[in-house]
Amino acid sequence: FIIMDINELIAIVKKKIENNTSCEKIEIEDKTFLHVNHKNHDSKKFHIKIIIYSKSLKKINQIKSKKIIYKILDEELKEFIHSIQISIQ
Image 1 (cartoon, rainbow, N blue to C red):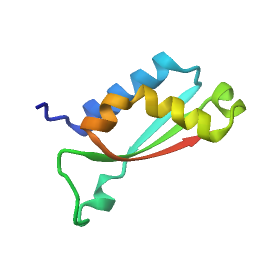
Image 2: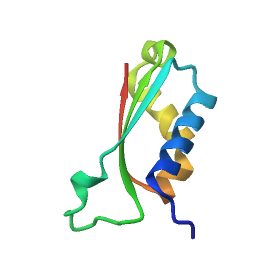
Image 3: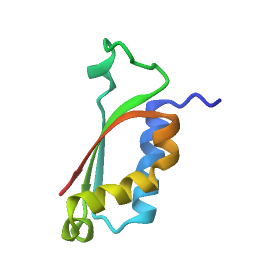
């Protein structure tokens, strides 16, 4: 079992999206603090918001483009991410 720190996670997520999609820019925000008081909060998992600036992802429908991101981040979602918010610009 690996303990991930938020900065490591952000770097991995960013690199995976950059390597697997055509995007101009990616912004990732840690939103974990918003969920600390929730009943099922797991201190080993994070809540992140990802803003992807991508002309190619913007061209396909939102559900398909988000599915692509979920597939790219499959491993991280299972291990380190409790909640993810994806915005494609």
